[in-house]
Length: 305
Image (cartoon, rainbow, N blue to C red):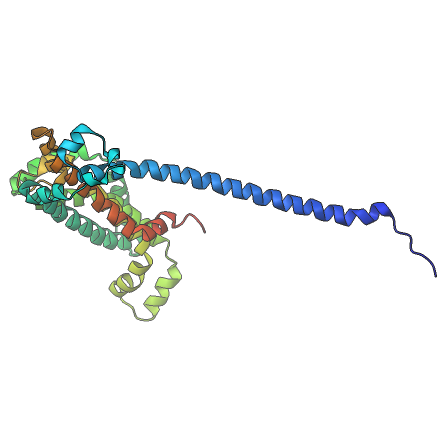
């Protein structure tokens, strides 16, 4: 029998190579874990920074005026017995604040719904319908994006005065709709234009009318963009004070103007101002989180092909 001679250097190579690969894999896992930990810690810090004012406003709205004047809101973490809903009871008893809240709803909801409906129809027409002057008209819509709101305040106020709309809720709604449409049409037209032509042609070959294609095909496909537009428009109208300050009178002014008026008249009226401000803040936050999934889809649409 002949003995097989094994080179000791060659014999050690597979074991050494395996240990090197294991070390590299362990190092890469450790690097990914550290990277994810750093990113998560950074996001937690950003989240805490963002939510701290909201938490402070909430706790201030649940404290009495005397407690807010004598100490900071963070003291409630050690003494939660300071918290009560008396301020919200006072808010509901304040006729000006409750009227302003419902005025804000009556302004924001129609202004958002009208912009979505008109912009969806116009966006589909600009994207897929042929009519004379389509491209030039769309360029005009895009050009209106650069016109600041302040430029149209006085001319529109004079026009609304002649039409009897100045100082009314419909006047404020019409102004928001008019200035929200250029961006809305631009956004939805570009989103609808990315729909595959073959899909629309197949629907037409099956006998679908333009209206049926729009309602049964285009709107469901464009739901992420429509949800994003709804969030943007609602937040802009709900938080607006400039337009409402000029176009709304005392009976139609929204919550932002009423809060500003309360600050001017009753600078120490924190028991009404704090819950009113929290109410004005929490509604847009709830709307955003309700449509968060569609909002992210709309923002990311087209970024990955």
